[in-house]
Amino acid sequence: MRSRNPHIVVACMVLAVIAVSCTIVRHDNASKEAQREIGDLSLRASTFDPVQYAEMIWEPVVLPRIESLSVDFNELVTGLAADEEGTSRRYGFRLLEEGNRFNFAVQGRVQLLSVDTSSANGLVAVDFYPFTGQTDAIMSIGPVFRGSAIRDIQNSFSLNDFTNQTEFARLARELNFKVRDVVLQDIDFEQLAGSQAEILGVFTYEGMGSTIEIIPVRFTVDQ
Image (tube, rainbow, N blue to C red):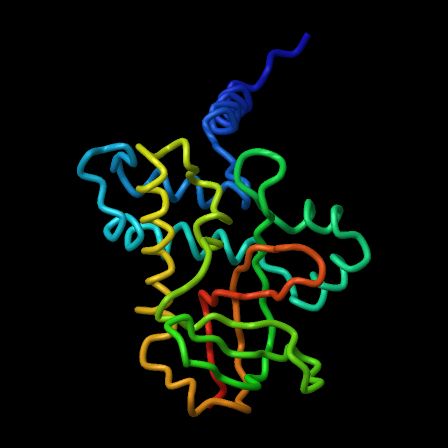
């Protein structure tokens, strides 16, 4: 029997070690990996600061998670109309147990139809491409935002990670404020009726026939 080439044996051993030591990170786990890399800030610490935490996770965790789940708005609403349960499970995410509302991430091109800033919860009626002149959804522009879809579509943390529900609610509020302070800062929507824009946003689905109210996390108006 011919003896094995020692160089080949060594090469095989090196490859085996490399294979064992490598870690493959799935795309849907990317936000969890980024969350762990942020540091050892405890969500249950008595000194927990939701403002600081929202700032820390916005770019490396929150936005990538929403981008990874985003689906074309028209594709989503068409799917929900045809198979609400199946489409919800395919594209949506909900916290913890059955019975909670699904949250969705959507993207697309919109035309701004009308602006209502008569209350602190400013709203813009939007028509998604292909434009028909009819309202497809409402976009929330603040400065006060209803709901907690930005927080609730995340999979890197849940209520169980926090000391109490109050802290969990504070985080939702601060994530919404990131939209006010970063995404929509200095945009004068009163001057934008009729304009077109690209949007990436989230909403909590209330069921067929309900108004879809999107909170934008990216919003770019045509120049």
